[in-house]
Image 1 (cartoon, rainbow over the protein chains, first blue to last red):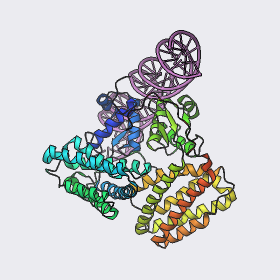
Image 2: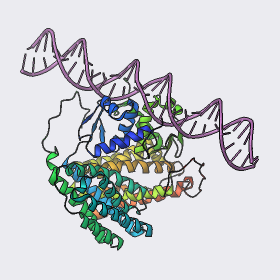
Image 3: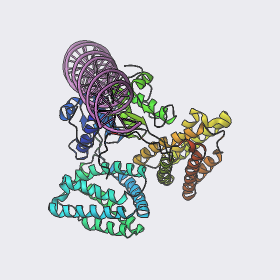
Image 4: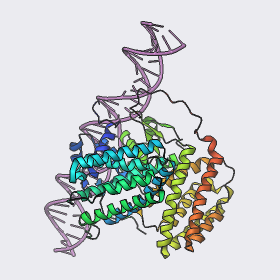
Length: 243
Length: 243
DNA sequence: ATCTCCTATATTTTCGAAAATTTGCTGATT
DNA sequence: AATCAGCAAATTTTCGAAAATATAGGAGAT
């Protein structure tokens, strides 16, 4: 066992990362059944290794484990996106608030540096910047830099999981929109309010930023969500008493 | 494959549940190395099945996966408990608030029913009620009943994970305390304020309840936490740039 | 047609052996 | 003594075969 992607310490960990990306980027589509034989070819690993990665993804709510019937990619819905958005706002406000109160010079410098990188990249990529994998990464780093000084590993861990789940929705809508409303200005305002330690303003801005992005996703990709189309499920053998 | 604990759909899922309980109840101690051969005997399953359970626990932060060096039970520390407590308060306040605003008659009835069961059980068990496994379960159900109408699966999922992690700390201190301050009165007050839809009061009470329980844990079991004893770690081969 | 039961096939889940990696030990070298 | 290389033992990680389970299709009864 010698060739393994950097940053991951085991083969299973590597597959985990790759699958996570594939789910977030919708290479594996919401609701899709994940068959072992197919995945085994795709990722070139064995049953057990695959199963380990899938189990972890299930714990992260990116896939769902169904009894003895295997795994499916977590489905999407407007209800889920709204729920996710509300909780994200709660968490993001709290961690930004704490960062503003406790952040030091390094934190400030890192925000500026990351914002600068994001800004330059956006200009370099042109109007379709949001389709770029690279931009997604820097954009993620930027939002992380804002809250990184909150001092709470628990909060940051929750935040990162929610961010990934939300990213899948953003990604879904990217495919269907010919442009993305100008977020550069918003990002700049957030940076300014944050570095000014204007907590109230910064929180209001980040709140609005998340909420509007979510509304934008629904506007452009809402038609993909099966919320009310009520596909009748195949009938199952038995259900354990549902009260 | 025929005998499996009820509620779990696969052998791995069953082992997961059992290990989770063993960790929370400190049958597997914080920081303890989890060797496969030993666990294989204890839980009577194979390597891969074990690995699957361990992976899931790692995603829940109850164990830590260390590169090619196996798994250890997540360590405890005062810093972690405090962090956990703060985030728990944030989440619990939000979900209680939403429940109070949206809860219906069924929700109210269920709170009363669960409180009643908890109260009766406490009386039946006497002064050492808090050592009972059964009481832990009902106590958990009670706190869940309060927030169950919040309407946010995402919030509830986060809440349940944090609740379990905190429960481990409570459990650690149980062993070392000859009594537990009277919580019955507090629980009753929370029920009353909640059913009165007195949001402000209910939130203040639940906040205080969680905070005080946490302080109580530190008071009685803090001496077990290795926070400042700085055990010098064994030297490792190399560390990838930690910047 | 619709349902039930049965069988054949597809798929998931579990298992323990084998490979890869880390850990601990011994002795040589400075 | 401290450091290091090299080997042996312990431990983790991966693999694919085998067992368990679910799914699909068909025959027969209502």
